[in-house]
Length: 448
Image 1 (cartoon, rainbow, N blue to C red):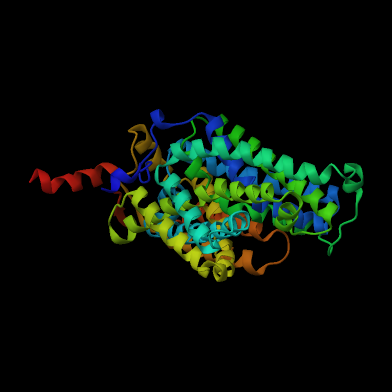
Image 2: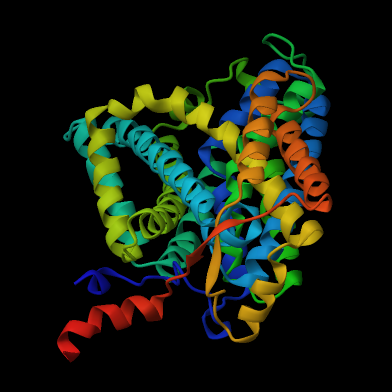
């Protein structure tokens, strides 16, 4: 029954060459991820506290940081064809550590899925007040769930529709406001709000999409080459950060406010509402998709049951939609923000293990030659968990510099040093169940 819901999308196995996509198909989705409504809000926040050119440099520095992280992890995902949480088993964390990563990704992204469903519901209720906001929240969440259940192919077609629609709607809504003003005057205008430093602005840009950068392998496992990963990352992140971010900066200078949602809906009415809805849709599918992949890995590791990705997606999509309709997730934002501190060190550790320390790199290489996954993984890697904790605390409590990048660099350096000292060791052995194992187990009773 589960398999009839939708494709499993290689949730616990490598994506074979025949299932890879052109870089354009993946790039459209990457651009859709980062050109969301949140990017408008980020740009407006920068514009409210910074001059145009200071905001430009903050976006530039933040984008470069994100691109480096996304490319490094994206190359790992492309080469191995595995999800972020599955890769973590052989990229420093072991089976148990990868389960923690899967759980963190699952909780964090399904939380944001519900919260953003609620944001779109408010816009839909304003456009069509016949239904209450809670009903729109439920319908919107279930509509996204139906798309994600069908898998990457369905999400690619959704991106082909929503990304151009979003860009056109933004051009219309923003153009109607900015056409009444001189762009040169807006670019030279002083910020209306409390001043933000270049360091603070860069922190906002880099931190705003760091979780998206960490889960890059979930997307790039469908790429065909390193060049494809580089092209889609540079195009998607650069356009997303500059086009949407700088428009937000100009709008903040024009309206003297950071509240872009109010600006957009008040200036162009129903078109602004559609901007909100479409902008949320094209990132919310990836929130739910990666959440499902992470929880599939968690359930398989902790409970020894390899569950279908589509079934898990359907379950958490319904739960997230119901919680959003009930308004419960609004009080969940602070917890999700704290949880986000744990993500940058994951990137630092995985990059250091795969490219520098290479403790389990040979296992991946041998398995890749056979188009499979390594038959076993370390159960625990205690040194990694300590490094993860220390780096997360640095990100949380050290205020100098860029917190998310501080924690990532600390994790990378500590892991590389400890690895070179020979202290990165796995304890216990965990068998890797594959999709073939699951299928054999499911068919065993009928064969008997």
